[in-house]
Structures are given as structure tokens and as C-alpha cells.
Amino acid sequence: MPNVYGVPGIVEREGMDLESDDMRAYETFVSDLEARGVDVSGVERRLRGQKIETPSWGYGNSGTRFKVFPQPGVPRDPFEKFEDAAEVHRLTGVSPTVAIHIPWDRVEDYAELKEHARSLGMGIGAVNPNLFQDEEYKLGSVCNPDANVRRKATDHLLECVEVAREVGSDIVSLWLADGTNYPGQDFFIERRNRMLECLSETYAAMPEHMRLLVEYKFYEPAFYHTDLADWGAALGVCRRLGERAHVLVDLGHHAQGVNVEHIVALLLDEGRLGGFHFNNRKYGDDDLIVGSVNPFELFLIYAELVEAEEETEHPIAYMIDQSHNIEPKIEAMILSVMNLQEAYAKALLIDRDALRKARREGDVLAAHRVMLDAYNTDVRPLCAKAREDLGASPDPISSFRSSGYAEKASRERLEGSQAGWG
Ligand SMILES: [Mn+2]
Image (tube, rainbow, N blue to C red):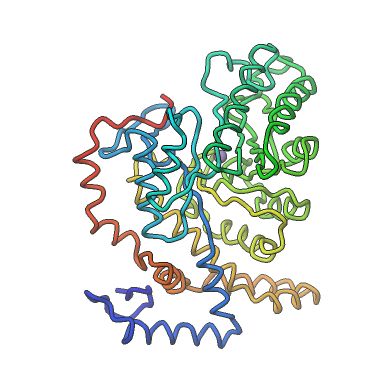
């Protein structure tokens, strides 16, 4: 068994003693990294500074088109979703904010929700409008041929700007389900102009500190064309709106084989990378736990981010967007955050000087091996140490399992409902 820092070969014990074997094992691990030229304290500092936002909808019941499997202890209202999220933050130390979804998280008094979050040591993050669930949106929301429907959609966007203002959030994060199902159904360009008109009105209503994140997705629910199908379409719209409109990359929203890390690099270079929706996929928009199917891709995305993130003018919003249909939700969220910590840690270990040299010299495999050296390093001890230093848990899943939180929630929360669809 690994010890509390996950250093292999040391037996795990009750009542860890950081002065003795655990700490000595970690020091050996650190000197090995330092011998490779790694600035370990710098890596530890950046790991402690990482921030991952979890989504309120990731704590509610969810399902596929075919079935929602309810889970015991699921939150009954937005307040309880924040309690679950606070548990994830307590154990990981890096997830202090929660994205909310309107109307799923609509409450009478947003100041009360904000205060509730604050009392848990949490904050409210991105506000996500819902432009896909009402009858009127059958032919789209902001792209709909009917001006009355577009008015309704725009009013909802304006409501979300207002909610963001009330809860002290600086992000409205937009995903459109708009598209067409059949060739000839509607005008591509007219639809785009309708969208630009609605989004311009929304953008103009945002206070100076607020940003609009524009998410794209190549298909679904529309199956012939999608109005914001890819990063280029999203970037074009952002450019038309203004400096505070940025592209959001959801890892599950590309066709098979698309090089997502390349998209990340391009958006960084354009100064328009606004944020991420982390998840993982095998086939479609599967919304599985980030890093579960393709951890190497996640590492390569972070490899592009680590150099750029300290120089970007605006902070990049790192958010999880997942649907935990069969797995326990809080544990799934904890594991997701840990996977993101590990991907980030590995990317921080990349020997940038060696990489630059190999690239300049055209040494193809030397450059590739620099990446493999970082990727193949077991960074769990570093991440455990960072969590420990933040006052969180070195071993969050075990801590959660022994805390009794899930059992208590199952006993006390009866008749929790699903996140909002089905
Ligand atoms: Mn998303």
C-alpha cells in the first residue's frame, strides 16, 4: 500500500506521522525530482493555486435519454448542492466555487444562496442560462425564426446577467442547443445574424467585470447543422461581440479524433480562451469523469496551458461539466478534481528547456520523450502533499468514505429530485 502521500513501498498506518517515515519518503521523492531539474517548490505552489469549479447539476440525479437512475441522498435544492460541493472542496482544497444553472437553481432570494455558499466557505461561479428546455425552443432559441421566441431567449439571458450580478459572479456561460435537423430547414446566415443580435443585447447589459463564455458543440440535439458547431464559429461570434466574450472548450464537444490541445493553443494565441468544461468521452458527448478514458489527452491540454496561463490577461475558468449517471456523485466529483490535479502536476514537470532544445534541433523523438518523461511520472505524492498543505485530505476518497457524509445524506434527504430534465 502507498503511504499518505502515495509514495509506493511504505506501509500505510493509522495516525500518519509527517515527521518520520512518510515525510522522509516524500523528501526522497522530491530529491529525485530535483535531480531531474524540477523546481519542486514552484510546482507545489502552482498546485496549491489551482482552481476547479464544480457544477451544481453534477450533484443532482441525471441520466441518459433512456433512464434516470435516482440515487439516495441526492440534494433536494440548490442549498444542498452547495453542501455537497463544499464537501468536495473540503477534501480536495481546490474547488471553492460552484457553477449554477438557471432555472434549475432558481431561488427566491439569491442573496440567501450567496450567503449560504459563503457560510460553507464557498462562492458562486459561472451562471449558466437554459435555452433548450422550453416548448418554444423547438426550432431554436436565439436563432429561432420567430422574433417572439428570440425575445424570450434574450430576456432569459438578461435575467442570467442579473443573477450573476446579484450573486457576485463575473461569468455568464452560454451553450446553445440551436441548430437544424434537415437540409433546407432554415437560412444559415440569417440564423447567425439573429444570434448576434440577441447576444449583442446581452453583452451590452453585462457590467464591466463580467465575461460571456461561448461554448460550441458539433452536433446534438440538432443533427443536420449546429449554429455554433466549432471553435471557429464561437471565436467569430466572440470577436463580433467584444473583448469580454471568450470561447469555452468542452472536451466532449468535438468530432472523433479532433486535436483538442491544438484548439486550446490556438485560442490561447488569440487571447480568447475563456474556460473549460472538463469531462471525458469515448464516442459522443459522454460526460464521463475527466481523465478516465484518455488521461494522455488531458495531460497534453494542460501542457499547452501551463506556459500560457500565467501570462493570459484574463483568468481561465476551469470547470467540470459531467453527468454522473451510475456512479456515486460526490465521489465522482472528488475523483474528477484529483484527475485534474494530477494532469496539471504532470504538465508542470515537463522539462521546458529540454523540450525547446529538441524542437529547435528538429529532434522529433527527443521532444516526444520529454513529454513522456513528465507524463509517466507518478505525481500522486505531489498532489497529496499539495492537498495536505491546503488543509485538505491527502487521500480524499478514503476520507470521504470514512466520513459518513453519504450515509447521513441518504438518511436525512428524502425525495431528492433530478437536475432538471427527463
Ligand atoms: Mn459543457
